[in-house]
Length: 99
Image (tube, rainbow, N blue to C red; front, side, top):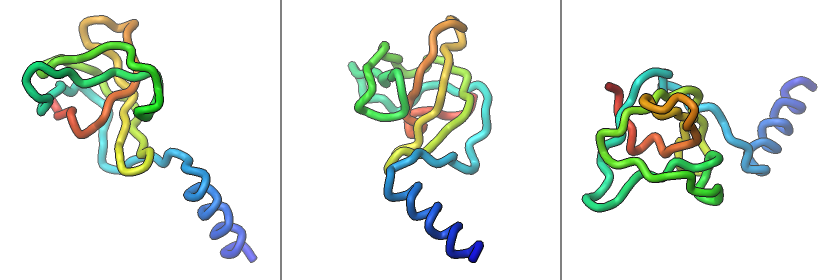
């Protein structure tokens, strides 16, 4: 019975599109990299492109990464700007690298 209930709960989470924690991403200091020349990585109000853009971060911007989660095929991390502790949001992990 437990296996059946667990399978139903797991299926419900997947179907409903709930964000799942991403393994292998450790909190700490990261920097923005890989953004094309003249573009910026968007800091968003939530973990996904449907959330409001708060600001743009050019390559080299240092951020402190907290918890990361996957929404669809993208990993989103809760970040705060290293130089502005009160400024935070979510950024795509694909454009962050460990400092």
